[in-house]
Length: 175
Image (cartoon, rainbow, N blue to C red; front, side, top):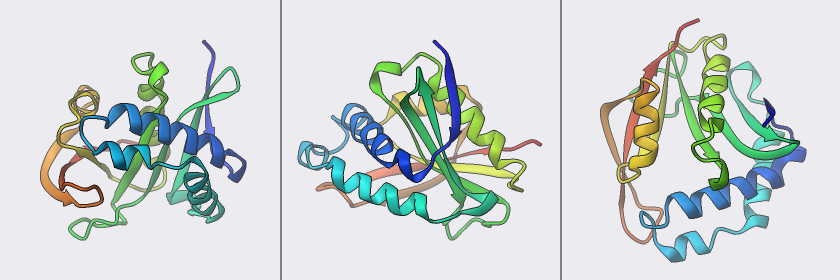
């Protein structure tokens, strides 16, 4: 199937919200509480995306959207790291990479991560990081197959009803 990856615009906010909601509900069902996942609201997520997409991140930040047959099926967002132990000039963070469950295993995720890393290197980043739920073995395997490694950093996220451990993954950029 023909696939296109481009920078998202404000008009894509609803599509990004739909992808985020569907992907998080499927990927995190046994990792986060049902109450948290069931409360993911399309309209609220759309408003959040409208705000994010209205702010210019310049050449060092952006959101890429993957489309198949003109339909948004995934996205990835990058920006300077906000981790206090990293240098935001050298290290960019992938804040999100999500695809619709029906395209898992089809190469969309690989195409997205390749595209986002391809944007980060010329933006001046030497390394990229991302955070992944410790129990999300599917995502961790995906990143590890792509050359990422856990760098030892761990945080405890308390946004759900129970604390969740997140691991920071890192990769060097070339370009």
